[in-house]
Picture 1 (cartoon, rainbow, N blue to C red):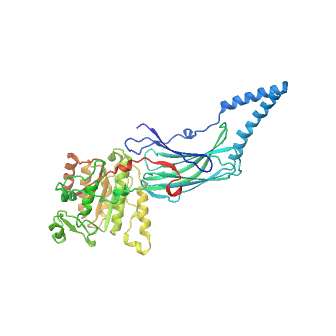
Picture 2: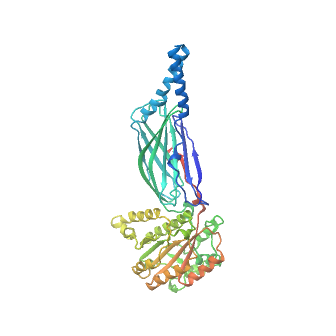
Picture 3: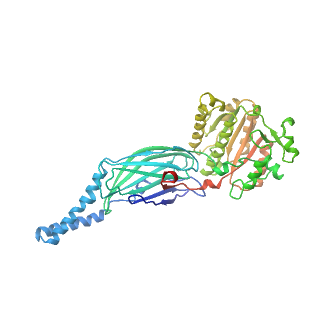
Length: 486
């Protein structure tokens, strides 16, 4: 994959002249988040004009020779002017660069995918030297994405007699991951543009963007299960996804209007007790639904995130969408009082014990909120792996599940059916069941997808097709200030 360069610029004006520029080194294709980091030497847009200084030095030498030999007014004037240039263009920038320091403040270091992050830089210098300009270059790197893409921000200011400069900017459409801030490059130059002195200042920082669905999509019906589709259209293979890859508004409204759909009921499944069927909704022609009481809620839920890169066709943004749906599932399971175990990554043989929690513990010490936050942050730090999770390595964990538990698998790989069938067999041995949540960019299920769904459901798996939100393709960019921080 060849790297491409995309730049997003923003300009603003304040008390003194300033220029703001944000750029993203992006090597993505069709929304892929695989990007490359710019070389450090390519980040310097300003440099000392050595050719100009060579000409100035030559002119000063001729003026000095003329002053010594002739002593005329013209030679004296030229010698004085050319002698003042090093003071204005060299001495003042050097003095201003002494004792430079920078500090960074991130008001909200934890945001959601696609959200906005505010960053505040405070630049200090020991002496208030006039007739110089300062160029600040900041940036953050997404350590969770392939290629570690970097988002840059540049700012120019002429502080005159100020010793402290505050710079605020916003990062828009931040993508899932652990974003790391490193060095801040400050360039000090003179007004004539002849000298540029670079200083690299350490200023570490971290910004976590947890996976999340776009807000509008998150408020609508999120699961696309064949049973629900059959209740509406009579076609169990219908996928209610719009041309843009999202749930259509008409379908979402019809799903929400279905009687019985809510936290206390679910679509009817073969084998459900006839006593728990919502006959009133069925008599009104609204479909077959099963009443779900709290005693039916699974005691333990295992969440498995497929991190195999080939499962997502090496599309990092599709992987982010899968984790966003998984985050939605974690929030719902926590609200229902279920204990959650999270397994993610091919290198993990056991779930993180610190990530397992029960919602009911919140009233006894508020630990639940912290552990739920830890789960989402763990999802934010996940990376695509080159190897798939071994089904055999999950047998021990399935043995630890209580009867009636559910295993939720989030992936984009619907072709690897044999592995999921084998996993379903392990779960059945312990009286547990598996739900396979498949994220797809297809607006309509193909024949191969419907056939694979049929085979998986015959093996005892429940298959849910999840939409890929097109809004997740928005490119990150920086802007001066921003809404509430202007």
